[in-house]
Image 1: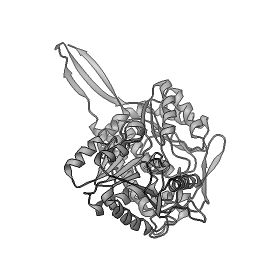
Image 2: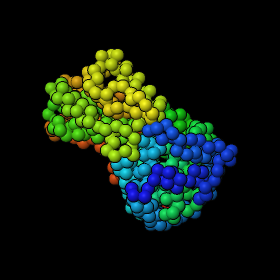
Image 3: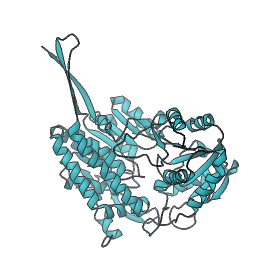
Image 4: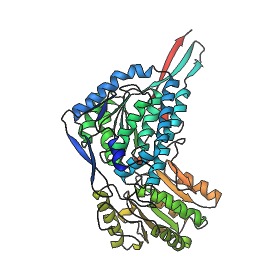
Length: 487
């Protein structure tokens, strides 16, 4: 970090809209503040786009689509590989930038930059593996040619909690497939995406392929682009409520959609589990990103025989976590993103305690500047508590005991969500049996982290549609064309 300053990394980022390869002000001249969640102080102002700015970005993407689709797959992959190298080279400064706008500790921010870069490396390799097919017609009279082509101009909407990785997870396959893009980052954390836009331009991405629109009015700017008809796909990461609205809008023009929506992840610990591994997995699944993750363990179901010991060990670990500004050495628990997040966590904990849950550590917000809430463990949480049905998005671990395997599965599946489930057991037969019964797109079996660029990420039920990452991630950005040939 030598020579890298907070003011320096913020000053180095473009604050305007990135459209057609140029930095341009919003046509209205309006800007909005970007705040440091650890202090509430303003870091800078960025351009606040209006609908006409969004349409200008779509114009640029549409104009660039044909030429970009014709670029050789190897060349598209090489651009991603160069961008990967630049992300790794600049990891420290990009991590500091992320910590300033989002709040996560520096070490975790650096880990996200590495994780984000891996999506570019993975899809750089996938760009040259887009395949097709050739077959003889069943009656022998003709041939079938199967081609894979870019879906076309794409709209991307990313959340604030992983401001770099959620961008590269969408941009990587879009670039590899030959799609142009308009991307709208979250208003709370636009700086990481603006920095990424410049990195991709420096890596050789042609003008108009990636266009970045920052705005406080997400719905007002993006809805006209969805209803315009020229964009052919929407990829969204965010809440299920917003996802439903976007699906309704996409239906008008029959846009292809990828939806990575909310989660309510159960964390199930059986009495035959390795408790050391279970507690370590719980710390990862709960405290990654301060609990502000759709994959965060939201409900802890622990078999009664080990519930007390698991609760004791988890409480000891949570109590020992240093809290403070993410730039301070040794900090593990940074601030939540804003005051609304603190208010929601406070309300959920109060609801649980009012219904009989006991606080083992934490349980109340911290006075002073910034949006801080301490690592919290609750036990004897009743199943009718709001914590059992609402995504917490904070550092709170609610523990509920169970007795039988069937009871654990029933409780785990008792939710409209189905993104990820965590399961800890030493019994191989139980591991396979329960994994198959859990209604989730991903299972963390004896581990607390499931995300990997080389694996398909996504959920079932109301946690989303489609998959990101892995060998199937690029499929979301490709159309299949069948060409009939008569002999």
